[in-house]
Length: 313
Image 1 (cartoon, rainbow, N blue to C red):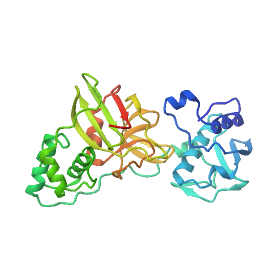
Image 2: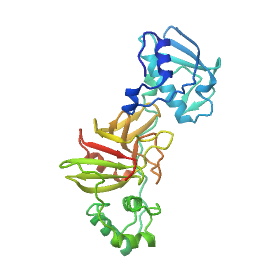
Image 3: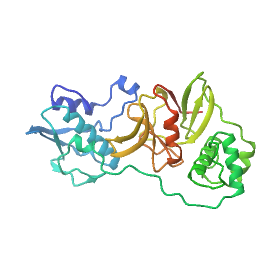
Image 4: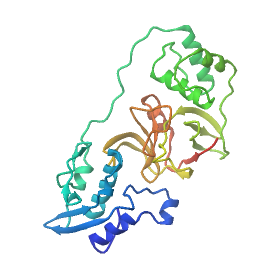
């Protein structure tokens, strides 16, 4: 959102984009700079804003919804505005995104109200124990990809995540499966080491090129986890940060989705649990983690814990 003396002034500043200091702090805007305001009027708490077609042209649902959320937040900062009606080239938008009907007036309270349940892990598929899997699990435990006690011989979600993290760190084909190449590599692999040195205490290193996060205590890696960071259009910004909150259930207003076990470290960017964690960068900027590890990471993290996001490891 943007402050301003008037609604029109605030919207003008929003469209103008980020200032240099805000870019350095990794703030993000979704409103295209080529957006133009055709008309803005306020009557009885309703702000009707008519924008040119560039606001929506050629943009996916996520970016349109994020832009709209920033627009609604900016206008709703004025006490006399409680609803926003969007028009494009003089017409209402016949489009529904994440349950939001753009043809109707929209309130900030509505965008901030969850409309879906908190995601839960899928039920596990019970497989019989396998000696080969148990051996691999024991090797992954020794390398701190899995935890002591995870060697049940069953190739379930936790073991698949550990295998994927191992394959990513070793720069192998990312399958999450115990294939022949992975079995061989497990027999000769060395324990992951931190890329940087930070002395005593806890910290985390997000390795964007490998798509893993190293959880570090006293300069020793205690767990390596597979993650999915920001896709090219919404990248996770490299830099030095610190955990500023721990939120068990966080609701994303721009994208209207739950972010369980959230550990924010810069702006709205956080580690969090997500149902889909592919082997490549796919998020809106956050660091996605699978169900199998997100709660463990949440318990490990501390307010003020350093986070280092590295482009190249």
